[in-house]
Image (cartoon, rainbow, N blue to C red; front, top):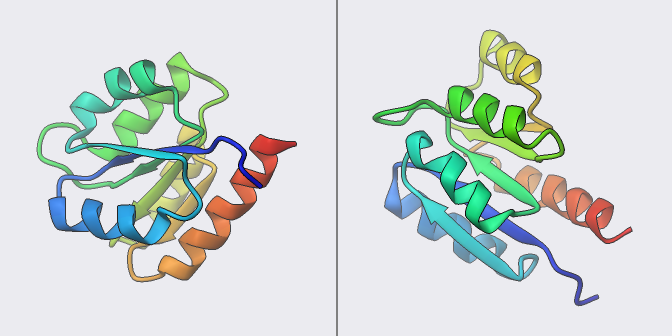
Length: 124
């Protein structure tokens, strides 16, 4: 299947972005990156990816705020919180913000499974 599936990675850790890019290269046609939530809306608007992987804790604008901003501007946006922080309050806030998934950075297999499902939805 050679359908289009593009991903935007928003994470302040360049090593994490590189690792995730490498891990997901087989399911994505194109992967772009930005390093802070403050740049995420413009990057989304410019790229219009099928999915955004959003870290939570970043230097200027946290991922939850950036996710809200993207989803407000683009209600069909698929944003997945991808973070090392995994607590019930953050999950609830992410859900309330409208994210479509929440995955721990320690669980790349769950990330791959979720993105594979999202890709199938995009290609239908």
